[in-house]
Length: 514
Image (cartoon, rainbow, N blue to C red):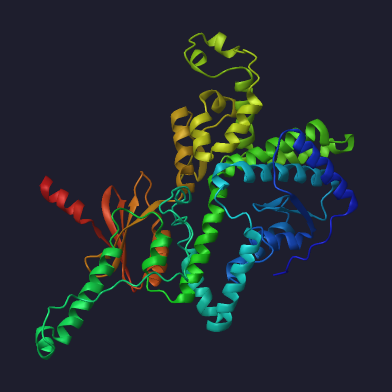
């Protein structure tokens, strides 16, 4: 895969950057210093495969993603217009073959993203020097590759990547200790060793070996050590951060613990982007649209800009377009607050005509969307501001796949169902809620997890693959309690085969009912 080799920004693009930055600041955007790099399509695909960074740790998945992006570009199926990194300074990339209209659009869009990265609360705990940190991660893992071999390290990374979604996305905002953020883990820190020496009976020197036999003391020391390990592996309540539990309790080598901590740290860095996809893209699209249509367009740019903007906002029956939903909802909110269509008086108005024509001239729209940009994520954004009126305006429906006709069709036009489906898809970034219940299941050192069932069953093929890799990391059998066919079920993997059984709670309930 090609490595990125950056060229300086040409004078013409540098002048455009100055203009676009001035327009963005004039509208009240507050962003990190932004550095634009001009790259070829091949270089941009390579950077995109690395998640937006010029370099990452060595792993086959980046090459696979690069091949997919390259083929999509060659066959005309996709093209990357903008790529921007949450960093201070903020790095963004411009494709060399794009026209000036596209470069203006991308720059305006990037300033919207940079403002969102800097000011949205859900990004406030992210590492703002991640460009350097990602490079350090790559160097550390390359050293392990040199020492232990590419195959062994890559196989271990495969196992880590399969559980990178098993984190607690809220833990960066929960202060559990006075001097530590729980989402960070120092694998090299040595805790004060616990004293497992058993108590001794007082005795004369010549009687000590009879009163305190060495073999008995050794057995007692081992018993105390095992009891302490069992206490550590039995959390008081469900532990959502499965990766942290593995870091603290799995029998890993030092280099493996370091690699797992790297994957976990990067998972927490990227997590807010998954939590704010609709808002982030909607905010950037709102501002590129505002800047371009009010100040950035020359007469020769209009048709080209309209063509590309409308293509970006195109909707589909089978897939939600976060750009479209985000920008339209921000515009809807701005219009509502400009007209004063909020508050007790508006909500309690029963006159449909008066409600439709309601306009107090409040003029609070711009202030409101800046407030929303600061405190919300996608879940709270949709839950708070998605209205029946908006769904009707945007023709939002609940779609489902008809297996008989192999076709997506409208399942419901009811607002509660539409909103519920959106919220279900956004909860925990669309991932299942998995937590560690016990690390010493049945007193055999086995890992027991629970799936918080919300009406959607686990995909069994995904679950089994994840359990296979969890077992590699834990070194002992792994179990997951979930619901299948409305029955509480335990999925298990012992290292050789997968199995399932009814949960003891389910069996007990059936016996009681009988």
